[in-house]
Structure formats: structure tokens, C-alpha cells
Image 1 (cartoon, one colour):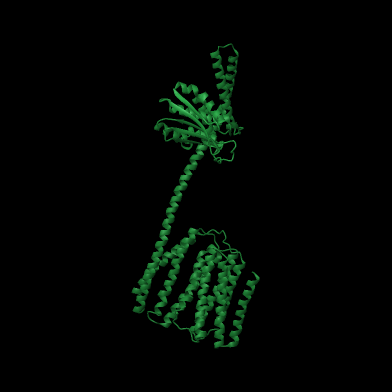
Image 2 (cartoon, rainbow, N blue to C red; image 1 turned 90 degrees about the horizontal axis):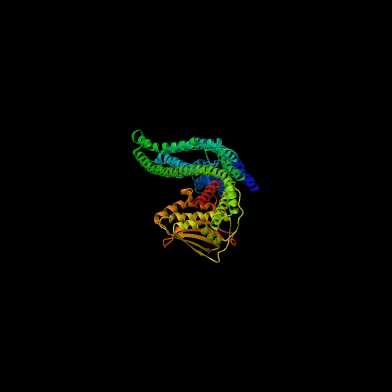
Length: 592
């Protein structure tokens, strides 16, 4: 506790001591009444300010808790000021019945609402919101009880004994309920909050007992303002001020305590019981009450009004529950769909990984016959052959070496080793693709045109992998034009720091639909989308789109060697990359 809080608490204690001295020295006099009323008003103002400072220094549900406590204390202070006005300024006794009594009765209602917030517990906002609606029902019910039991004897038909009796019984019941709620909250709290609730319970218990004794003294005609009956009341006011000051010096953060589900259920049940009690009160008034007709009529009107208000609150709560239920159903559906998608991805990832291991083993097995074929082709080239035969032997050796290089690249990828990237001229790559594919184009009467830019910048990459991608796209164009023939145009150009290699052909709409679907690796599996993995590893992208003139264009977009800070490389699973790359290699090997 800070020095200022200690001084504040010392001042409150001094007021209590001064009240004790005045009670036993001034006797039953007007001076004692003035001193006692002002002292009590000062203590209540002190407690209100102490609680308000706690509200200003906190946030969230904790701030709302202290604001409600401040409101309750402020109502109590307002009631005391009204009492002081009559006894000090008007120099007359407070009338009975008195309209200001409702202020004293209602000052406990915000405190009950504050306890319902349970700021010492970490709660789901949904639970807190529903709990607030349930307790709003209970608070309206308390106000209804006051209007039902007390107010008729003040306005419908004046009856001072009935008014006082019903007010005292209802006020005592309210205090006992508040003490019970405080005891439950105190028992379920911990840390600094437990200390706060303990002192608040003690001060409230002293106040409840002193109020009961004071009411008994009033009925016995022995009470007067400032008498020794007021000493416990003044002590409880100072004690509640100490609670506010104690909370300022303590760490009152919510503790991670598990909220009981039964607590929320019972609160909702009490709210429903409160609603169902209204028709019972109305039936009691109609058939079993001996009260005057004016009182009966007043109580029936109050019951009907309370029933309408509480019914509206129940409708609002049901609307909130329906909205939350719909949101929960939608969230469950999304979670189920996400779970199914994740399960499918996991199964696909396992399949791809198994395929990668299988292809890695197949690459090892292919190396042996390829080595033998390469040796035989070299021996064949060393023998005496004609020019045409030697040309064919050289082509065999060239294709065997290319296949061996492709298998070696496949093996390196299966072993997850990075290949060294070098500077590559995409124009040279396009010419190589054209020469390697020339026999297939000629046999199917397909024309190849090249439109290569002279200022095309070089790129960083693996020549074998990029060659595989280009051959794959070229072979796909060959299949699309195999029956109809046509022309394939290979273009290259630069754009915004990127080198672009483009393959264009004219095929039917059906062919384009098939190729566009096959291009999507996520849905078609091992199709043209297999090229994505390689291009993405080169920080580029590959697209398939129709042109207004009827052409279908496959664009390979790679960052120029002088512009390395390009678009980010999208993250993908290693097993999917392996499968896509493996499919690209196999397509290049066997489609040609």
C-alpha cells in the first residue's frame, strides 16, 4: 500500500474514532446528529472515490466490476446525502414512507451484478455475455419485488406499518443474498482477489447486522442518529473504504481458474425461475391475497409490466443463443472440411514420398544398362561405318548420354541434393528444344517458328531441369496438334526484369480444356503441372492461358541474372516437389 493510501486510510480511521468520541460526549442532541450525518457522508464519499480510482486504473471486466461497485457505493452516498438534507438542513425527521428508500434498496443491486462478473476468473467472453443476460433477469426481478411488496403501501394505499415491515424484510433478504453470493465468490477465489472478497464480506456482514439492530431500535423507539447503534455502521463504511485502498495496492489480475459449467447452468435456471415466478405472484394476488383492491390492482399491473420486460430479455437471450449456435455449426462444418482436406493432403504426401523412393531406386537400376548402351555406342562409333551409319551411331550415343544425365538429375533430386545453378541463355535452350524435337515435328507435319529476342537477359538455373520443362511443354503441344497439324511458335522476350520463354500453338477448345486441367498439379496430379516444382525452385512461375487470336500460350517466367531479388519462392512439401519433378523427367524421357 502506498504512502497516500496509508494516509487516506488513517483519515478514515480518524473519522470512526471521532464518531465514537462524539457518541459518548455529545449525547442526544442536534450537534450529534449533524456530526454523525456529515461523518457518514464523508466516509461514503471516501469509499466511492477509492472504488472509482480502482475502476480508472483497470480494464475489461475488472473495470466493469469496480464501476458497478462504485455505482452501488455512490447510491448509498446519495441516500445519505438525502438523509442529511432532512435532518441537518430541514431539521426534521426523515418521513416514513419515503421515496428515497428505493435508493438504499437499489444500492446493493449493482454490487450483485459486479459479483456476477467474477473478475477473478478468466472467462470466455461468450460465457460472460450470457451470464450478464441471466443476471440482468435476476436484477430486474429484485426491482420487481420492491415494486410488488413495498411501493403499493406507499402510493396505492398508504400504510406505514405495512410499508416498514415489507421494506425491512425485503432489504434484509437482499443483504443476506448478497452475503451468500460474496461467500461463494470468496471461497472460489485465490490470491489478492481472495483477500479483497474476504474484507468485503466482513464489512458487509457488519453492515447487515448493524442495520438489522438499528431497525429493531427504531421499532423500539430507542434509536437516534449518532447513537451507539450507528457505531458498527460507521465502522463498516470505513472498512469498505479500506477494501478499495487495499485493491489499489494489490495485483488483482484474473487468475486462470477453470470456470464451473454448473455455475452457468444454475444461473440460467435461477433466471428462468424468476420469470416463472411472476405469474405465481399474480395468481396469489388474485386468489389468496387479503390486500385492498387498490393494492391488488397495482401489483397486477406491476406483474404484467415485469413479465413483458423479462419476456423481452428472454427473447434477446434466445436470439443470442441461436446466433451462437449457427456460428458454431458453421465453424464445425469448416473444421470438418479442413480436417478432410488435411487428411487427403497427408495421404497424398505419403504416396508422393513413396513414389520418390521408388523412382530413386529405379534411377539406380537404370544406370547399369545405360552405361552398357553408352559403351556399345562408343564401340560402334569406333568401327568402320558409312557416313549415314556413323551419324546414326553418334545420335544414339548423344541420346544415351542425355538419358544418363536425366537419370543422374533424377537421382540427385531423390537424394534431396541441390544442383549447382549456372548462367543460362534461354534462346540457346529454345534452339536445343527445337533441334531435339525436330524428328517428331517433321513426322506429324507440324511447323516450328522461333521469334527470339536479341536483348534477352540470361537467367540463373539448372540447364538440365529447365530443358526437361521445355521438352515437356513442347511434347504436350505435339500431342495437341498430332491429328490436325499446325504451327508452334517459340517466343522469348524480357519484361520487368524477367526473361520469358513462350510456347504458343492453336488447338481445339476441347484440347485447351484438357490441357488447362492437366496444368493444375493440385487436381490433375502428374500432368503439365509437374513443371511447377522446377520453375518454383528457380524463383519463377509458369502460366497457361488462351490468347484473343485463338492461340494457347504456355509462359515460363524466370528472373533475370541481374535481378535476383524477385518474387518469393512459394513453400511446398518436399514430397510433392519430388513427385512433380520426377514426372517431368519421366515425361521428357519417354514422350520423346
